[in-house]
Amino acid sequence: MGIFSFFHKPTEFFSAKDKEQIVKAIRNAEKETSGEVRIYVESRNPMVDVMDRAAEIFFKLKMQNTDDRNAVLLYIAMKDKELALFGDEGIYNKVGAEYWNSEVKNMIAQFSKENISNGIELCITHIGQTLKEKFPYDATIDRNELPDDIVFG
Image (cartoon, rainbow, N blue to C red):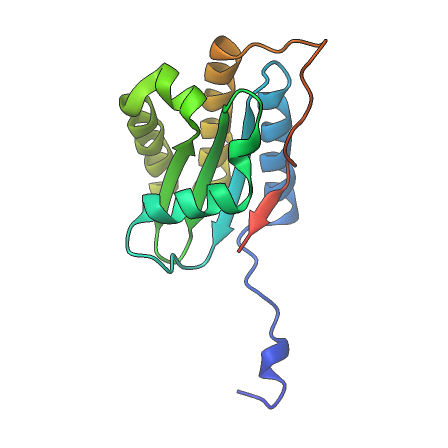
């Protein structure tokens, strides 16, 4: 440890290509829906329960402020190997708990094959299809309510 160790560059979880792939998946998923998808990635979950942390981040990012309450947060704690999907009440009530559990299982299957960015992309695509079905895009009133970038904690 050197004297300037506090200038240490933070860990990069994704390559530039992976980040581009994930952001593109978010934009594609949101094209045909009023729903919103965000990704939050951090090294470690500072809380005990992963869903509590996902909820905390969801509200910190003000995702509950979408008009139709149809935002979805994909939360990942890389070193803790934890992930959660947190859907606002509008989308959660339309699809139920089993939907979210199934999507998490699909992502875990991809992650266990070391396909993290592909697993994220696949999950975003599935969520986008569901949002499109439940909250179709209306060009007269819909707008991109939340940023599409990946948030790193």
